[in-house]
Amino acid sequence: MTSTAKPVRKPLVLRYPSVAIFLIILSLFTVIITVLGEGFGIGLISTSFIKTLGKTLCLCLAALAMDLVWGYTGILSLGHMAFFGIGGYAIGMWLMYARTEIIVVDSLAASALPPTVQEISDGIAAQIFGVVGASEFPPIWAFAHSLPLQLAAVVLVPGLLALVFGWLAFRSRVTGVYLSILTQAMTLALSLYLFQNDSGLRGNNGLSGLQNLPGLDSVPQSTVSILFFWASALALGLGYLVCAWVVSGKFGSVIRAIRDDESRVRFLGYSVEAYKLFIFTFTAVICGIAGALYYPQAGIINPAEIAPIASIYLAVWVAIGGRGRLYGAVIGAAFVSLLSTWFTGGQTPDISLEFYTIQWVDWWTILLGFSFVAVTLFAPRGIGGLIDKLTERRAPDRHGADLGPDLGSLREKEANE
Image 1 (cartoon, one colour):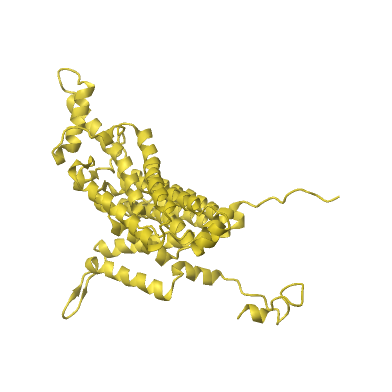
Image 2 (tube, one colour):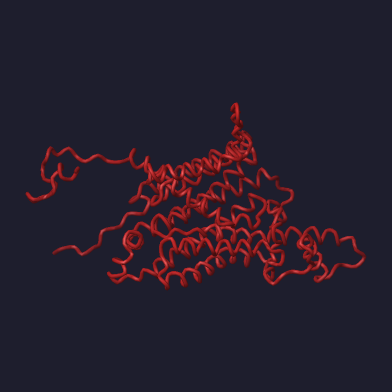
């Protein structure tokens, strides 16, 4: 009598050791930075650098999303940083409202009569929008007073925008460079709209003071920075785990097939548009969450953060790290982001030549462009490809023996050719 019990499937971290290795490295990194930081540790690492590391983890999460949509599905989106910025604006609206509300209430507390709700609301609006010559809340700020609703907006607004845009694009079967141009046009239109003062988001001034958490005035920034660093590390770890799960099973095989030969996958009966729409929307949500964690650490957000160049940088990070590899996307984003901070932060000494002085603040983008071209031409697998070579298993030494039970099986010599 034969047994019909199905074999027990191993957990994801056991089937894919790279996932477990990444989570372990991320956990150790978080613990080390916490111990060396000023908030709960011995103070060897400054608060500003911990914020830089926290922001870098958020950029790594956005790079994961970019790798999923481009490296695994073959959709070169040049607009995903727009979703990143929308998430930042959504949480920034609540931070500005709640912080300003505390200031207005304190200033009106000395009045002879208790202030009314309308007076408080008018005072908040005047404080926030006085810089653009307005004194009333735009409709877009209707739910800015509610943290749960703004947190929902962090997920829903990027997701709905990506869903509508993706549905219109994919149902028309727009692919390749044309789709990339469309996503870039969407990002440019959004950023140009936000630059206007009547957009409801303070135009070029953006939202500022986001590092000041309402109700936590007595908590030092050294502690707040560590809390956000933890949140960023947790989000990156969970994001990596979810993305690895998405690409590990049958679903992952289908999106890779769409990347390699979309027409054949459609011929086999798969709904290519549905798969692409899910990935596009899912990655937009990931970017929105990353942006919501990034900008409270940056302290300010303005429309320039949504400009198309930001999404191009995101693609460059993934290409340098190695697209089609989740750890490659993280490595590329972390490497380029920290290197950019080093070159543009005034820490790198300028190189004085007899006829010219190289100032890295100006030359960094040129160096990044050359790096992207070099990786594309000479190392298409990126930095992640080097890890692949280091961990690559060699073929067994069979001395020309058959590689299967039949005499006609592929031999070692043929397999290596």
